[in-house]
Length: 447
Image (spheres, rainbow, N blue to C red):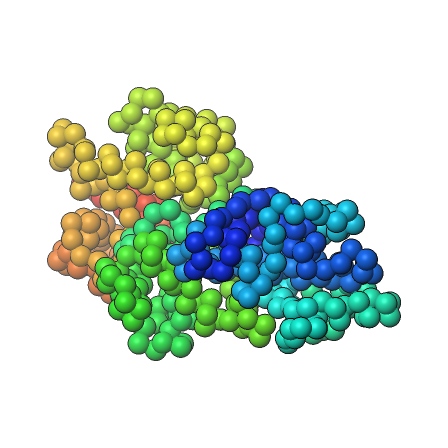
């Protein structure tokens, strides 16, 4: 699950959510300056202004982090309506002292202790409208008594809050991974969906629990997705496309109360990752080997691409090959394998598999199918995994043999785990590119 960032820009709908008002996209600091200048007075004590800026900034970041409106199908991050969000008057004058304070504070925000999401810092003016959160006018006497901004915030939101300082500033990238997740997909986006479905399942027990949230989209995950889709009136295809992704996120936000004053929150442990966000020069390990495998395979059929050594080390050779690949496929040429480059590598690989030249058809079954083969899977890829296992087991008594029936059951999974243990690979019981390549090499060795 992604940790919060401060976006470079925010898109504001100039009216209530369902109105026909236009959207404007403005730099995030300018948005906060506008809100602060629209809602509070420049003559207030500076500590009161600072406390309000913290609350206004955090409120906006909560909307963005939760994709509160985008998860409902809207094309904006926040509205200008105080009935729903914060006051924003497009192109209004900004108070000089407010501008100075916002420039200092716009990438600081409030969190609950032990949680990572920007807190829903509900507030109201405290005169015509009151609420359980911060009172804007109420901050003035507190500041006059000498309370610091953090102490003012504690007065309204409790002692168990922290301030995050100097959060990273990046482009506001939508959470949807850009390609549908389906049986055999793998990565942190799959793990996010698995965790979110399990939490939703506590409120909607018809959704089956996913026992292993390891980031590999198996049959159990597919069944949980199908049930979610049935419960929430979506097409029941078991695939997490854009509509299903954002519906899951919207329901997850709701059951967790992420846009409420009293929130369950997202704990630090819930935000940990087992898959890298990006893979870059200097990295090592299985993700790098997988990238190198894809690059080598593609280079075999495309002379404009560069083959590399599959050594698991992201050195200069791999970096140059990634640059060439990105240039060939119209991607940002930065030598970093992020979401877009990873999706394109997989798409290009699948494209070559689908159009494999006739002279390679005899070897097609030995080529990694481009997705994880998992328990519950059926079909040609499972047949080949089982053929691998049979031949390996015939030459290595430590590996249990299996029937070649095209059904990936518990015996096939047990044999895969044994092979992975032998190879020093993570014992997932699921066949990704590294396990496939290891088995294929042994299969050929024993032929």
